[in-house]
Image 1 (tube, rainbow, N blue to C red):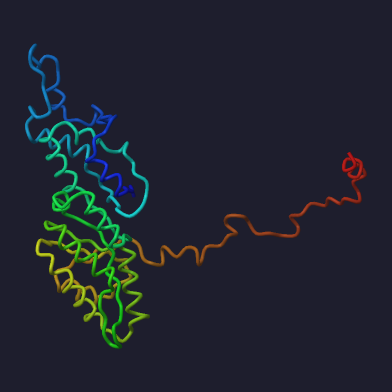
Image 2: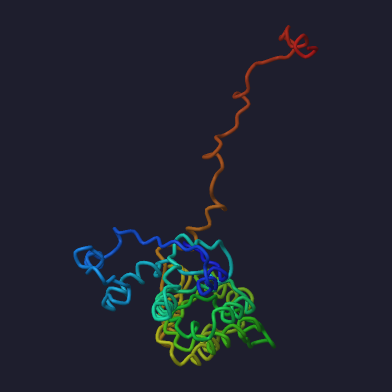
Length: 288
């Protein structure tokens, strides 16, 4: 997975002393390249980016700014060489077009981010840019028990949902992080055994439904983590249960893997027959 730091995203909107466009000619549509061919450029006229049809400009933007991997807000190195930040600095019109493409077309992951990290991202990039975001990945809200038999969402998760609702006003897709879903299931089984699954989902549902623009809510799970009944209760609320191609046990290799396969099985017979007492030259070498 590619990892992107919130600082790197913020730096897109700052003036750059040195920029380098990395779009290779092999990645551009042939029609775009034809627009820059000398035969298509008159003596007193230069072809500019804005002179291209909008569909060509969007093609350039998508090749330069859209990625399959989510951009994480919490940690990780910023890989500027993967981007083409010079596009942000061409002029105001291109800046607006590229900015919308970047925020609306990419998925932003805040699966382990705190409320402070999310608030810093929103504050640094501005409410307008945040309003362009359409898809985020976030951890399933953590639970707390105010009293026996009842649960609620903890303070940090509640603050993040509030910030999400107020900042990402055009959010369309909300995906829960795989491991956080598994942690929620673990909590229900071991920490809150007296609380019903349906009651828990009702708490989550009431928290997410306040995001009026939301069209898709996807719950990432392992193949074997949700029971058929839980999946039915989840989908009855309009959510989508996306099971991965693996089970939770597939990832527990550390508990069953034998180190003999790595290092071989030790046997006393593997030792050589060297005896220091039979090495007449040992003490002479040691004295040297």
